[in-house]
Length: 100
Length: 415
Image (tube, rainbow over all chains, first blue to last red; front, side):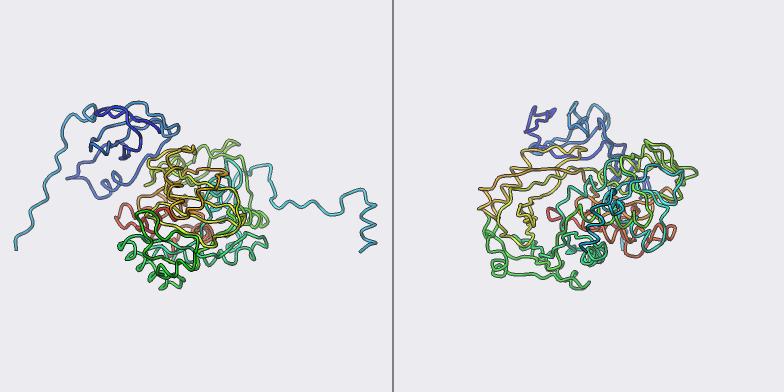
């Protein structure tokens, strides 16, 4: 079976991992338009080449980044999200419901 | 008769004019009214209906490989309309009806064979879903009903009713379900289109889409630049790459889909049998081979390689359904690159670029829609961009407006 190297758990079978989409810039969820949010959630570059992707090691619920060639399936590099995300993204709490 | 035969026998030349089914034009014209990118089933069907119903014949189909050599040749040829949403069922039912008369229309045998399709339920939740699908199907004139294990046993005596931990509780019996020879469908459409004057250019790859003032004006190919009044892309797995050349993104990811066939055996299975819980569908071709298919690969890839783990999983489930198949040998396997949308419905209609139309997002369900997609896309193109009601729900903008057409449950592993 194909092997992927998890930055936390080391070499594991690819069947232990779940693909999580391309790494793209997230628009500010509190201020962006619906169209911008839809673009972020549903639309993809879907290119052939080395692409930066989200992957999950399902057994340990550990999310990380992989650089993978989408034509040859070669996994070039896997690393912790801390390499590209330096601060925590805070999602604002839901606005309080209007009191009746 | 004997005299004419003798006369021909003494002639130097072959007595009949050589007649090619598919005229092969050698030169690209400088400009066409319509350029269709992609010479698969969908592309040639659009050309056929443009010529037949709208008299538009100044059309070029540009195909980078050969006619019907992509996913048209790789799908497992299931024709059915037992989907979940009214929009989907309405659309696919039209297609199922059109398939019935296609061979007559082409005067060419597409080996259409209406055998019925049976989907198995192993859980109460699946039965609830089936009940809804049966009602939606009946509402739009389809022949679909929920049947019990006794009826399933009578219908498919070779089926194991208790495969492992998943006993068969009920079935969705879709009598309209059919199969046809996929290559022949593309050939029939291509023949009909080219005889009416459409040009099919094989080995002609579109390298770039020329857009001026947000309007498509031509394409750059490996054989030079060709101008056009409008263009439509029907390139399946490579939809996103072509759209990027026209300057926009699609809500699509490309996944490989693997399938395989066994050596031929005596006919034993008339129906197409599928189970979404077992991620497997099985059918016997008219040649006797058994075709196995399942879901797409677990992550996106532009590659048609084969993987052992998919084969092991898929065949383990197929053998649970039909245990005697364990003795059969695999004859060959293949894969295609499928353009999957997140709601498992296609994308048809307008694009962000004027006069540039989309026929994409066909994932694992494109073959069955070939006739109706060709017809409605031809209506769209001929009217200069007026979207027919039947395909309006499948506009790409549905993703921006959060009105997806969810067909995931009715699509997964049964195509």
